[in-house]
Length: 287
Image 1 (cartoon, helix red, strand yellow):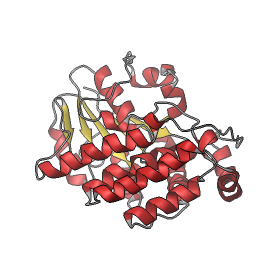
Image 2 (image 1 turned 90 degrees about the horizontal axis):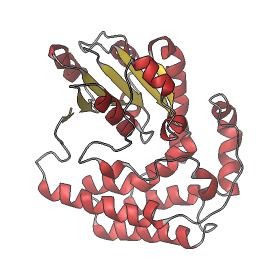
Image 3 (image 1 turned 60 degrees about the horizontal axis):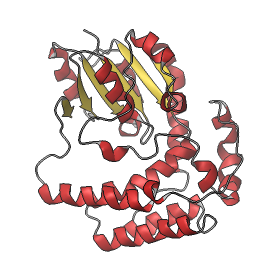
């Protein structure tokens, strides 16, 4: 039996990586985002291979407990642990486009979604209309939340520090290499032949938006670079993200407004069906 842990920040490809790993391990079952160590203790009784996907953000204030998990001290003992690194500039865009889904589940209304979609459409129509800073501020205003402008970058800094301490226990996977099809090192680490499909498990297709990298180049504006490069440029460079060259281009509605509308509608349907748990597909378990 081979148990595998997949961990990464929010919107760094954890779902697609965990899905591919699950499909590459015969008889494996995939469990999504447990937030309590008690659930992991129950998995100690599993008799078939288990793949567990963790979101670092859920454990960011419990780093020592997370260290215990990857070391097999929480009942569930991972034979292999994969930690994903993704450019936080792309991660921010992915988070902004996905935000409406979670806000709707938490009670946001259709008028709020419509207003947010109009902001994104304005960016699509005129790439210079909104910086990412503007988009973040508009998201906060529309949905009445207060995410700091440096949110993603600060989490990346925390994750980087944690990963530095955990490197002896994890295989670090570049999201950019993974979506480009380079899984040679991952396959060797896991000791399996990786499935070539990049489809996520049924019921979770909403998480897939571009399956690429570098969107930040066409969506960021100089004021974004002016804010984040001085603050975080050195940290990103340590992970190979050294380039800050912008290449302004329109945002494809399929990756912007149309995507937001589609996943928001899915969230409205899921909310209407509560208290039933959504998105629990065959072969997949939600913690």
